[in-house]
Every structure is written in structure tokens, then in C-alpha cells.
Image (cartoon, rainbow, N blue to C red; front, side):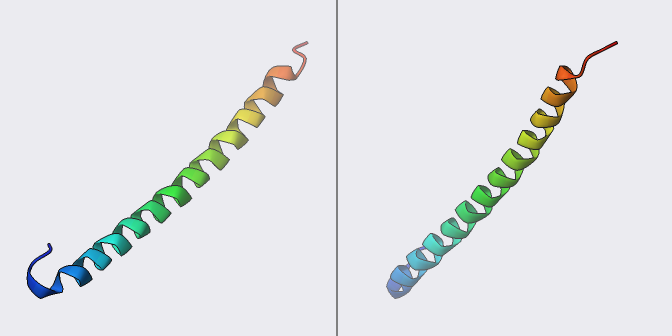
Length: 52
């Protein structure tokens, strides 16, 4: 919503909002990676157990 004299401030706000969204996305991605890595390690360990 850039209009009139407040355009620069609206742009700054938009950049901050985008930065916040990216930061949240990066944090969520890291969390998902951590969980999936833990699950994969557990699955790999289960596969290596002898069945007998």
C-alpha cells in the first residue's frame, strides 16, 4: 500500500514484514529438518537391528 508521501515508510514496513516472514520460515524449516533427521536416524537404527 504505497501511496502519497508515506510511500517510503510503507516500503520500510513491507520490507520488515517480509523479513519477519522469512525469519519465521527459516525457523520452521530448521525445526522440520531437525525432526525429520531424528526420525530418519531412528528408522535407520531400527533397520540395522538383527531380526532373530
